[in-house]
Image (cartoon, rainbow over all chains, first blue to last red; front, top):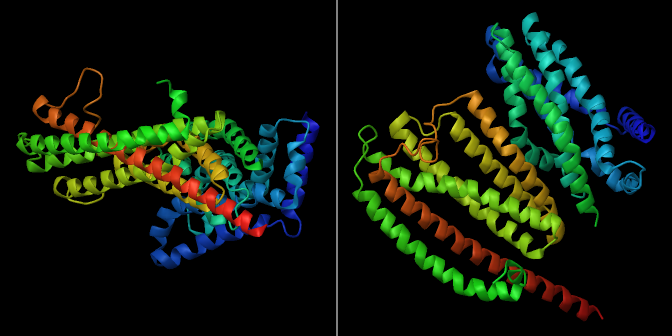
Amino acid sequence: MIAPLAAIVKRDLLLAVRAGGGAGVGLMFFLAVVVVVPFAVGPDIPLIARVGPAVLWLGAFLASLLGLDGLFSADHEDGSLDLLFLAPVPLELVAAAKGLAHWLATGLPLVVLAPLLGLLLGVEPRALGAVTLSLLVGTPALTFLGLVGAAIAVALPRSGLFVAVLTLPLAIPILIFGVGATSAAIAGEAAAAPFKFALSLTLFFLVLGPAAAAAALRHARD
Amino acid sequence: MPIRDLANPHRFLALARALVPAFAILAALLLGLGLVLGFRAPADYQQGETVRIMYVHVPAAWIALGTWVLMAASALGTLVWRHPLADVSAKAAAPIGAAFCLLCLVTGALWGRPMWGAYWVWDARLTSVLVLFLLYLGVLALWRAIDDPDRAARAAAVLTLVGLVNIPIIKFSVDWWSTLHQPASVFRLGGSTIHPALLTPLLVMALGFAALFLALYLAAMRNEILRRRVRTAHILAAARAER
């Protein structure tokens, strides 16, 4: 059962990093969001450093949501989604494997880039660690929740913003607990509770996301 | 009459023809009575006359929440039994729920201005209702984005059910985030904390809102069934013209 899933993960990763995959676009979007923030709030370094962690979370949040649209629709367009229906593993696990590959290709690089962009914003080292750790725990929840939106909009043309609009209200708890864990850690308060909540959301959407996405894909097919 | 008889659109239309005026009259009577009672009820000792906004605000919030539950029940009908009337029910309920949600937000803003000194504060209750409104808009956008009604119904059904699971989490997380709104005071352990003089008009208004919702909902379902028949007739006519 593991071999077909590993093959799906490998295929999606290769597709994402090679020409036409667009794995780097999310990173560029993240960079662009961070770069425009000082223009919006003014070159006030203490202020930028104070809102920096929130900006990093918001940038990663938006980059994750806006990158979702190709998750199933590319496979739908070239017909490989029909082959995935015939795979010798349940569609739920196929969806989970695609979610994992998508997170490895787009989510994990955001987590790695976050501390570097944090230096750009003048965020303190302690806060950098907190942001990176909470992003590492929170971004998988965004991807696996996003599976649902991507599956619902699989056959729609120009679905990019649409998927983000469908998913954004549902993703608000992830942002709340992610930023909550970060700011508690920066303030020196007990960050364990919001951190564990963010982790529990990730585990929750790890189950709910693939199941609901598979249901949506099955219903969109016939 | 067993519920499966309602599954027949003909019988449903006949029933709706009788029930829509009945619920509309009931709504007019109850809302009229509720408004009179609401204006005769004593003013609150802290909030003064503005407490009367409650008689519109709270029932609107209840209907806005209840409509999502009704949509989720319809979504199960769509996904499990693939019943066309469940699709119609979900589609008819969505805009009405969004309207009541907006009514709740607007009356809340008008109430917040004299009480808190601002139309909008980023409080947990307000924010979670605003998020519910965004979810309603998402469902409405999805209904409009897919032109095939069956596919649109199934996509909207999945979104509605995921929303139903997620709404308590959103509510809880937003409570954690910040709170200023008063806690629940009608439905709570140990009984209501609202004095009966204020509670009676509130419950009458809530029943009136429920009757109004049912009248609008059944009328919208009837319109949607007729709209689908017109659509089918158009498609058949076009197919015949081609031949």
